Every structure is written in C-alpha cells, then in structure tokens.
Image (cartoon, rainbow over the protein chains, first blue to last red):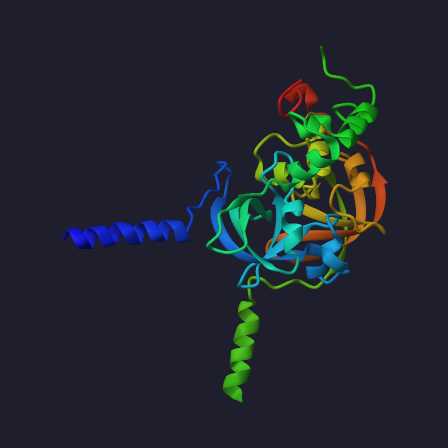
Length: 171
Length: 140
C-alpha cells in the first residue's frame, strides 16, 4: 500500500513537472474563454490573400494565430497594459507556438489575448511582455509606458486629451 | 460517382466554419476605435472620453477598427497605400474620428477585416462623451 501511494505521488510530481499549470487570468469579459492552443503564427493580411513580406513584415503588421483545425484568430492583445502581442509573436512567424490566454468569442469580432507563450509542452510559460521590454530598451524605464511614450505625448500635446484642440478637462 | 457527388454537395452545404468569404468592395462610415477596449466592452470606449486610451492602444500596437453605425466592427489592416497596421502614425492621429472609407472586406472566422483603399471623409471627433464620462480610464 505504502509503495503504491509513493508511486502515485511520484507520478503526480512528474506530471506536474512535465505539464506546467495553466496560468492565464480571466478578466471577467463577456464570452471570454481561458484556453491553451498550439497555433501557427501568421501575417494576417498575408493569410487573407494580400501581400506577404518576409518575416511577417517585421513588427509592422498585425499577426494572427491559426489553429490545428484551420481557424484564424487575430492576436490583438499581449500582457503589457494597452499593448499588443506582435513583439512576442514575431519570432514565431510561420512557426508553431503554444499560447495561453483569453479567446473572446464575441459574435461581432473574435479576438485572442495572448498572456503567456512557450515553444513546447515541457517548457515553462513565458509572459507575453515583449512590448514593454522593447519599449524600455528604446525609451528607458518608466512607471507607465503609455504616459511616457514620445508619440503619445506628442499626439496628446497637439490634439488634447479629448482629441479636439482647445478642449481641456475641467480643473 | 453519385455517392461522391452527394458527399461534395453535403460538404458545400454545411460549409466549414473557417471558410474565408470572397473579398467584396464596401463603403463604411463609423468611428475609429481601439479594437480591444471597444469589442470587449471592458470600459466605456467611445468618443472624446476614451480618446487618450485609444491613442495609447494604437501606439501600443493593438489593432484599430472602425465601429460602423450599424454596430459592426471592421479591423483595419491597410490604409490606402500604407500596409503598416501596427502603430501606424496615420491611424494613431485619427483615433476616435468619424470617417467614411471605401475598402475591400474579407470575412473569416467571425472577423471582418478591412483593407481601406480610400478615405473619403474625415469629420474629426464628433462623439462628445467626456461631459458624461470624463476621461476613461483613470480620470484626469
């Protein structure tokens, strides 16, 4: 009995090591589903029959995830606040990768929010935070990238926080 | 042979869910929005109140869409001759604007993708929501 119990615990421990737990967080969004998928990363425009530049267009074009059964989801969001997942996915252009995140099955538009990714099932999930890493390398450390970003600052300085020149919040 | 034809007809009738519809030319009028906030409804995401957040998201590389007057969302993957769809300076600048565009629509797996061929009109921001909502998110 003792031997079999030990065997079960050992098997469970091995299983835990071999299959790291899912780590995506639900956001309480209507029609969200926490999923892990093995997908192929594609340039969305190319997958839809348009031009196909090398390397999925670097980081200049939106990327999609094609599932084993051929469904195409746009990867619209990464784990950095207010940022997409292109920097996380671009190394896998045309390749398979495992993604952990939220599939939003909204009938108006289906979306995928990549929270973590890994190359194979025996690896640990890595957070999809490449945008922040790239941004920090380019601009330096900031508490909130979106308030410190030079393009954001210039846009808001020109057009105002409401997008209309001369229209400002009440003090 | 008859059985084979019946199978083909049956397959065509049921149509696989990942089918891509043939592209078609469309004219769309609506507000330029950040796709994530607008579609998920995680916050109030329209007009002046949400403009700053829409700029953040566009600069952050989240796809830009047009929310048409009929409620449909069209994800923009090209704007005229510019194929950059991540942090495109032109789409950053027209966040929250009401625009009318001609384009090529490709539908696949529940998403309407729009390749804009011509911006016909840009009325600027007409959806004045800040009076009711302030600045969304985070306020001033």
